[in-house]
Length: 262
Ligand code: AMP
Ligand code: MG
Image (cartoon, rainbow, N blue to C red; front, side, top):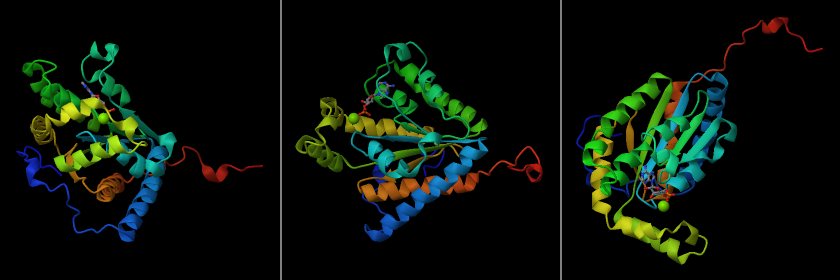
């Protein structure tokens, strides 16, 4: 977890780290247990319908955002779950403030929302490519903090995961996308251009994670070179958070003992 107000250096975190875990049956069993537990807790969150959980996924191209949705959220009930992928803003979206499209996608009470990319793009790609003047993007860190505070006050617990891969790992994954016909579709020629801006992205991520990690909406740096560990770490943090939220089945508003099915 990124300490609030800390000056963050991503170079200090090893993307190969597995926190002492080893790949294999044990890790797989642990992941499966987490997924099953998420399902139980989501059911209670949905029944309670008083609070929501928002999971934000960010990371460089090929860092595993899609894979995390596919492998970690696989046990969730689609009825209580909402995944939103944020792309280049549409013509309509671009005519509004940067949080307009985000706010509409925030999960309602009872729902787990997953953001595949997010409002953070507006201080990442936008900063790296100077898509708006510095005076505009630099004000956004505070605007994001205020926005997230509004959400948490309204019962939305926020978890933000930065999927941390190395530049070498990205190279392997992009090469794989070129080689493997089943992965060709994932290839975007722009990713190769973005790769050249790696260091700029690192700086932008360090600023975003450092300035926008708060106790209410913390950022987590997830070592993600090993996909199995990434899945384990993300699922573990989600389960622990849902356990802490401890959603409860609502008490019926009527006298159950007086009802009889005839
Ligand atoms: P992908 O996640 O591979 O589908 O790509 C989505 C693309 O949309 C990425 O290149 C993002 O950087 C880009 N994108 C997302 N949000 C924004 C934004 N607010 N402004 C500009 N580009 C964005
Ligand atoms: Mg992409």
